[in-house]
Length: 160
Image (cartoon, rainbow, N blue to C red; front, side):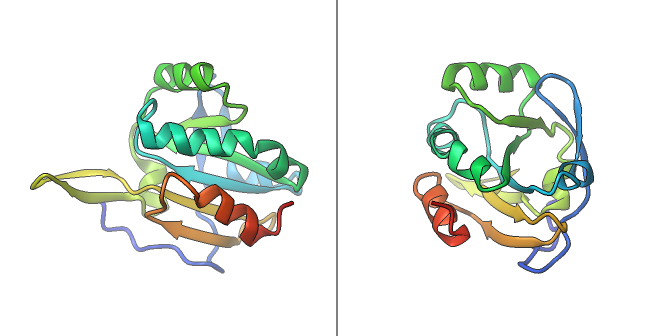
């Protein structure tokens, strides 16, 4: 577990079916069938400082993404209840996937061994993936910084 190969630009995005905060199921193939692309961002934990900064950056640029044909989806291992509190507290306009069994994290190579203060543990590597309407990865970044990476993404995608 946790040694999944990294994905690269040009790879086909791993198909998935996942539960979002309200309990409904989303499927990558169904989202792409609308003709829009999908931005998946993996983050470690709801209501932590870095994850809040990142989520609020996506929130503040949400209209720019959607106007350009991108659907933003956040993914962590938190519960639906935790996600709902995070959404409510920060007025997040996008869905959060409940990935308590790490299936999406493993499919996208973001469930990794980490080390903090000399202790080794498994956790989420903060990462972002842009999937075009054909299911191809157009932008892949592992170990992104919570602050500033949304601006880099907007710039790289040419979103105004």
